[in-house]
Image 1 (cartoon, rainbow, N blue to C red):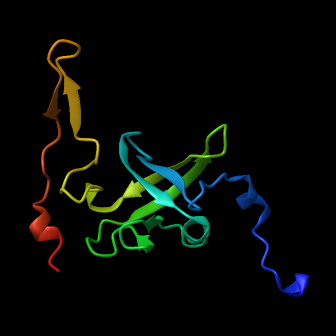
Image 2 (image 1 turned 90 degrees about the vertical axis):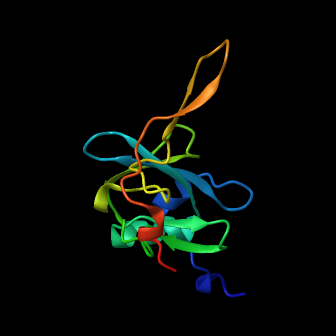
Length: 140
């Protein structure tokens, strides 16, 4: 193989420490309220696509392909800022969430359950309302 034909990653990309499957966790946070919206996985291609387009692109492990947030629901994420943690193995995307819904359950955030009753009787409590019925979001 001709070394000049190798496609080297951009200098900034080598700072990311991907796991053995080539993935890095990415946390999406509302850029205006600081509320944590969701966590997803990214690979080098999805990170580069996110940087190139300004729209959040993740890697769907269940589909085995890139997943452009909102491709089915219309609930896209416009990226305002990307941060890397101290170990280089977690990304934080500060986003503007279209439609105010990040979760496939029709809620603002995927983190809608809180553990209450600790330590005696732990129980998960749903804290956030469904803003839109998922059947009305995903028609296919």
